Length: 515
Ligand SMILES: Cc1cc2nc3c(=O)[nH]c(=O)nc-3n(C[C@H](O)[C@H](O)[C@H](O)COP(=O)(O)O)c2cc1C
Image (cartoon, rainbow, N blue to C red; front, side):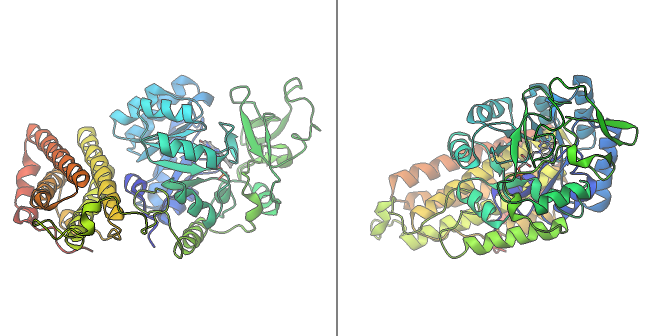
């Protein structure tokens, strides 16, 4: 049972488990551990100096060659500092940037133009729509159960239901998820993966102070409180979810009228009472009175373990849970698929007339095309990660989106035929990986589209069902226009890659064996 979803291709990770970009807590050691284990880590860099961000990026790269991202909070950052932070992310070619709290259109545009994947964490359907319009590539739907700052007022299940149905972007689920059951649930509800904060605070590599980690693993279920008392450094009215302490009980005075005492230090920097700082390894002071961020999953965490172990355990539990019954579909992340659902392409129930393909023949052809799409999506995802030139990166991203879309269409068609869609990756992937150079591989992808078009043209006259026929016809047009777009770009740039790929095996009509 593979947990791989399309967002894994976008993020270039194996498992759809994402480490939340937790300010102070998610530093290089933790981010590297999560990405190295097959997940995707975000450095929590809210308000950090550009030099520090650059050195943390380097530190992750010293530990792992896997992709990772950076988290920034525009609402809690001076505009000039935010601009400099964005510049560092672009300069360092980080794979993705998450933005949270408010929507920073300028930052999104700059990042996207530079080919950086933009992830927006949202707390409502309205916010999701705005983020989609502003150009986000991926959304994180944050439920009310979440630890740390909580943007909305809707519980995760309700938010996911709305966002997955109404927004045309990959969605990750966040809030109270700490185990395989949470991951399996999220996938079944249509998320393509999960973002976890609290579960990774309680790991060996997290930069949280041991006091914070201990409080998390000792907490009972339902221990957390949702409050606005930790407000210094953030926009007024922002709510957080924390473990209860003297501040949330009101024993430290009125947070909005009381003079702000100093309760700790991080080097030269004083830590104020009521500030959003949580206890870190690098701090001293009254940890009990700091913001002890934790989500509603705390009651199910009972040990501090290496982050890779936590990630692997969660993935293993989810796989075990999803195997025996209807499982979340691993490719589209959509709700569980029941292969005994009614056949919609009804003409194929008894199709052996007029030369139409029977159901088995149709299934074999659709699965071959599906395997080619798995392969092409992976090749395109790798190109997104590898291309340093923004134009080529954007082209790779467009091709990737196209591959993912048509892969989903083929998958759905097979399900409607009551046939198990293939999870194999076509041999095109192996053929592509030996081609040197981003432009050459992009050209090879374009020729892959030609191969798909040829196969579809042969299949189309044999498809009896009108609706499937129309769908495959649309697919031919989309493939052709994608191939033309890739060809135009590469020709304008000098056509070097196109001729290199022309010599490759795809020209001989080979997709190779499925791997
Ligand atoms: C200690 C801690 C710090 C956090 N800091 C940030 C942050 O700096 N930026 C951000 O986008 N989200 C932050 N969050 C929220 C996460 O992005 C995410 O929504 C949340 O952790 C999900 O809920 P969970 O903690 O129950 O897994 C933080 C969460 C925690 C627990």
